[in-house]
Image (tube, rainbow, N blue to C red; front, side, top):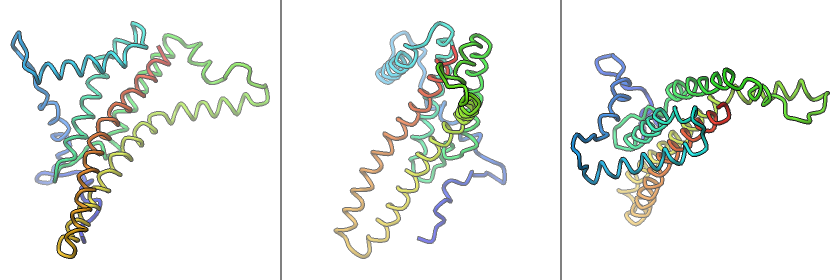
Amino acid sequence: MNENLFASFIAPTILGLPAAVLIILFPPLLIPTSKYLINNRLITTQQWLIKLTSKQMMTMHNTKGRTWSLMLVSLITFIATTNLLGLLPYSFTPTTQLSMNLAMAIPLWAGAVIMGFRSKIKNALAHFLPQGTPTPLIPMLVIIETISLLIQPMALAVRLTANITAGHLLMHLIGSATLAMSTINLPSTLIIFTILILLTILEIAVALIQAYVFTLLVSLYLHDNT
């Protein structure tokens, strides 16, 4: 019980060197590929999920926006596999680090915004001033819309970090409580252990949902600028 509650969120090192890069590169190795004409069930299911996800996200986009389909599918696959691997015992979840999530959010957001200013500069500037705004409120609304635009990548990163971190902390606390109660009261231990199992199932769903929400919001930002 004296273990540091945030120890699992510290970036691991190997011989004093940061191991986060190796951990980030590990999830893509788990995605199977096929060299045969007829795929097995795993590859078929994987391709069906990718087609379903890309179809749902790309339906609202025009031709220019659909050029991002490969990047968005890779993004949701990477975040989902990273979140799921982080649920394993004694593992490290890179998406609990705000710096990594910002490193994903800022370039994608900046690319979408820059594309909007290059291709549809009038529409992009029109977002800063809604139609029919009273003249005295124009300066204040321009400032508010500018701030809301600039905090979009921060909101993306903080949302993903907070949801994944909160789930891991709650699982850590309930797991420690289960271990502590095992020598005191067996019926209470079984109840807490059942809650832990249900929470684990919920965290699996949260890991997938947060990957989808992150990618969907990037897709919406892209849609607004193409």
